[in-house]
Length: 107
Image 1 (cartoon, rainbow, N blue to C red):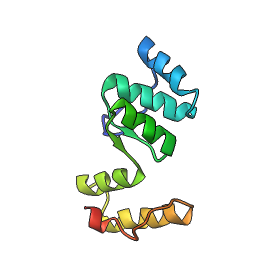
Image 2: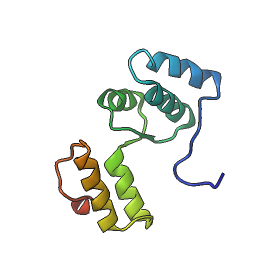
Image 3: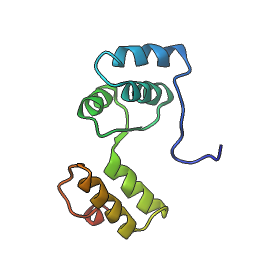
Image 4: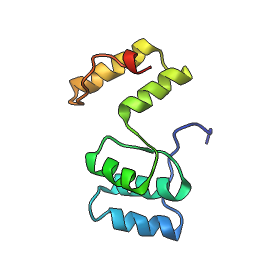
């Protein structure tokens, strides 16, 4: 696997598994696993789910969402600003709610 800034991983330690089970009582499986891993490995957590964001804040986890990922992709040069705005427009077309027409003011 080529190292990058997004990785596919699963809970491995006993603590990750325990946290996963605890968070699974109130969050979806993906959010629970991701949050448990972020806590234990001190990684950032990416989600747009309101309940998962609240749990991450309570746990003191660095947090981002879809727009934060678009901004990071533009800042790293992975995509252009125009591509970022196009992706945002496509997300909005499919129901994503965001108050700005462009990510330009956030860069």
